Image (tube, rainbow, N blue to C red; front, side):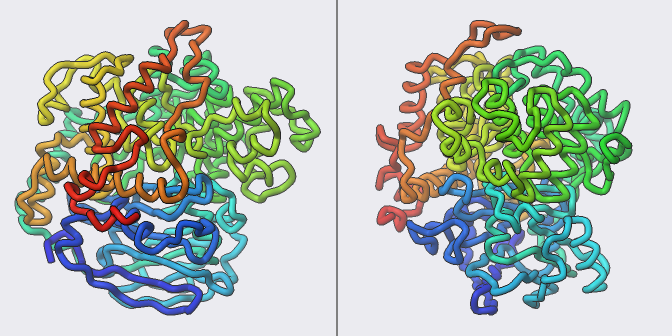
Length: 619
């Protein structure tokens, strides 16, 4: 078994109340690495085509990677995957913190859960031993209280806990998973899958460190990042202002989502920016395992009944989704909305997008005040946003409809609502404007999870320099609004590299160069790996997820942006700018071919064989 892995997969059948351990060979680890590729592997192998995502046949997979739990900055992450109750296709989410490191130390690379417990339970995993424990006393409680009760009950120092919240119990289709109270594998409804299995939490404690092949080199790389972060050479803005530090640059470029993506700039941008947060309500910086950047925000304020710093603070995606995209310029209100989502367990991106969808429906007369339980839900209504989030998590009144997600809610409301629900494959669009970053729009369309900004390419990173892509043989910058074959070549490499980072598993915000990343993989595992192998690992993960979606009934017609993004802005820095639909369609076909897919986006048998997964041909 290579270093960096434990070599064991914990299997849990909640229906039968039993557990067992699998020990895959090294060849399996070298093929799938971990993370999203492992998720896709188990979904393809074990989940029936007609499986109800909220039924016992679905698999819930917690997957680490070879870098998880090592001293490498960015290694404090894990993937959670299942068939998504929001999209009906490939579900996958990534989060940080410390929980996944503790899972490795406790003796497991991955946990695969099936079935449904007859009553609420949680798992207690400690140094290779597993216990299914009663969780009736945890059901219906907020995440902070659940964490306190588990710690008190087990009375073991250093426990790490991941859980679903009340929203997961209530099967809100975009309920998330919560690591350590402040870190969130947020997207595609993995918290609802936990809730459907009557599984409230997994508590973990381990005492074994992850084995490294070349500890000296690993520690050298760890010290390098730590030193350069402290000296302001790398990630200075992330450390100072976190991910909200990018608000003003996006606003200046016309790429800050505003009023349900009707506009790309926001009059109140400065009020909700990272520097404003730092100067006003920030009380602490937080981080993940082994990371010197400390980009996480911890905030506190007294407005709206007070915001508890125990639940961290809003990331950029939250500032955008329940801030500018809802027309709200009040940091205290945004922080309260963030706290509600964190206490109750909802993805802030989807939750904010559902609120902004409802706001536009109200302003256009598609939904009335009576439809919204008496809430006058216009853009900018902070109190209305907060009230609706609470209703959604508890499925109360109109919250029961909105808990289904924007796409399903729009279909129930009627045709006028459909064009206002900005989703791709059923997943709400994150806070990055494709009319600003055109290849990002292609990435939204082809993403296996639906609109996703992480396993994607951000055009702005290559607008003025191609240094980050030199290892791919790309030496010249490419304009952000270009969708030529040259841009799709860059997109092919960069998006597959990011898919790879979801298999290894590591944070995409830590600014390792690609050569340093290869060096880290070699030092941890002992494998003589390369940029080429890592790109192919990402391509393999993306392709396996694609096959799962095809099996679930998705096809090339689902690889499409909303009509709004093919419509020009009417104001702001990008006034008159739109995505040309014909150019977009040609770019899609170009990407398909580079991936070894046919004109309808189906992976060819030859490409599946070339990727070493010929068994998938039958799928």
